[in-house]
Image (tube, rainbow, N blue to C red; front, side, top):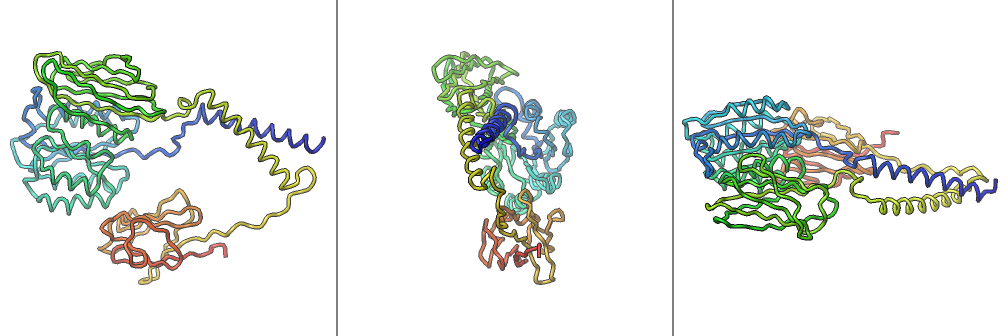
Length: 471
């Protein structure tokens, strides 16, 4: 068979293989190949006497927390979260250790009652949350309180103690202020270790805001970005809120919370057509999903047909499409297939010319560069810590026994820093904060390591070297 004909046949075969792989990618494979680890959540709930105060709709703060938390946590059950419950007044109780059992969580929430004490030992409650989370990753502390710290440690002592302990362990804070909390103290906690969208969760000073905040944090943990709107409507009043919808969204999820029943909420697409009315899922709670929303500006219209003023809270999430099957239409698929086929033909021609296919065996190629393995050397005791060359691994350095490189030094944080490997290079990432990680005597947040660097972790200094372990 002539050489050019063989080249053409090979090009067609390769094109078909590329096209088949593209179809599998578009219609079968979900691109989320790096799922996040399951979240670990500790609900730290104030049960002091103030939590029995009624909200505008007659329910107490603690009743709203009991009624709303479990249904909302159930909504992100596919993430298989581990949830614990810590309650506090002047005493602290672990009402539920970390568990994936939603029935156990419901039992723990139903048993929560307020006490007669008006004292709040916030510091001891956060210490209990830290103990429960330990060194787990993807971990969240949700502090729901109506009180300033009035028992045990002061606000400043809590920030310097339990707050920094949580930060060093990699936990982050959501804080829900139910109206009587010390806002400056909560701001300091979140500044230490802020969760995604944490600033949106702060104000829960009335019933609709509290319900909206409780709805927002599990969805934010699940990777959805909540957008919150708060306000009040006069009798017979109305408000319209705009929501921008970018391309490739799977859905818009909308929840509305009112201080009274009877509210009417409608959703309009960019063309002004009404999608449908929201349904009331519980008293004063409305919800709806708009699947495959068109790109543009959507409108949420909230009407108060009653003769009394009401407060309201709206939360909407724009959920990015998780599967390319819904993103790429047939035309885009065909265009990609044509591009892939052209690239395959060009590639085949280049390979045939480079290696002189069908006429001469390929010539041997020179060996590529030798990858050099890194090592940290402790000059004080001669200890050597080999770093390996796994691009998917993280080497944790700190005083915690769970770190791969453990440094027994009081100035070293439990999880002080991380070293990554990629493309033949090693990179250092600070996790301790406060300029406690240094390279050659200078504090760094992140840096590439080179042979001979002196790397400081608090008061401990190790020398970075690279050795060819093939020799």
